[in-house]
Amino acid sequence: MSEKSPDHLPVSENPRTTRVRKIVVDAATALLIEEGHHAVTPHQVSKVTGIARSTIYRHWPDPISLLMDAIDSVLAPDRTVSTVGDLRADLTTTLESLRLRLNRRPFRAIFAALLDHATRSKELIPAQRRFVTGVTAPLRSIVAEAVDDGRLDPAIKLQVLVAQLAGPLFHQHVMLQARITDELIANTVKGFVVANEIPTASNRM
Image (cartoon, rainbow, N blue to C red; front, side, top):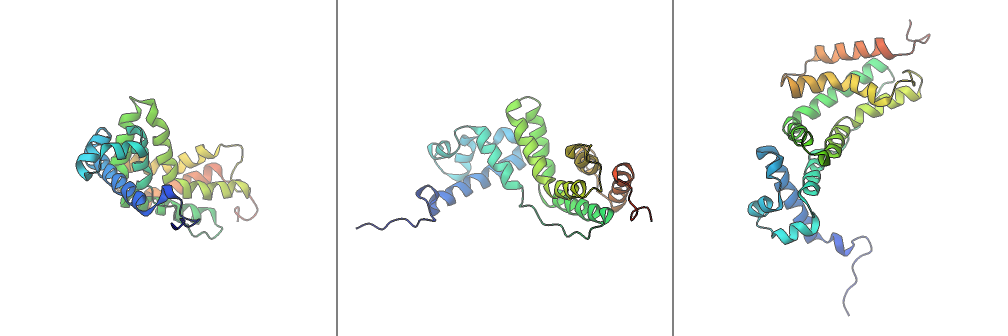
């Protein structure tokens, strides 16, 4: 009598499949960073890994789906940012965390590839947005909490508030390819709070 697979390990998620998928995604990610999005194809990945194209196509029926998985692999899980309940301090801490994330991951190469491809192919616009959304997720969480607590104007869309904070860092890192300084973060937070914080008895003191 053959053994049954454990309930927690579906046949489609057996260790060999998981291992093959990781090899393919790692190779696709390396190609994306080193050669650009055009290199992320089943043919190129097969050449690099030795895995049959038929196997790659079975998991990723088109290059776009493979590229999107490569992009997702670059996005490290959201890190919890310690907060103290003070808006300026929490925003500063969160932007410092964002700075670390931009510097530690191959953000510029991935974003440049996405931007280049998205201008010519609308298929990749969701991937570009998903990448940026993933990178800014901790910041969005802090801002959403401040809106819910009544510290920020709820009439302003959340995405606009996040853009006001993340925009200067993205511009410095991607467009200017320059260092994100403590001064830039401090000025960004100061301008944001002055423009958007709802005055209360406590923050007027």
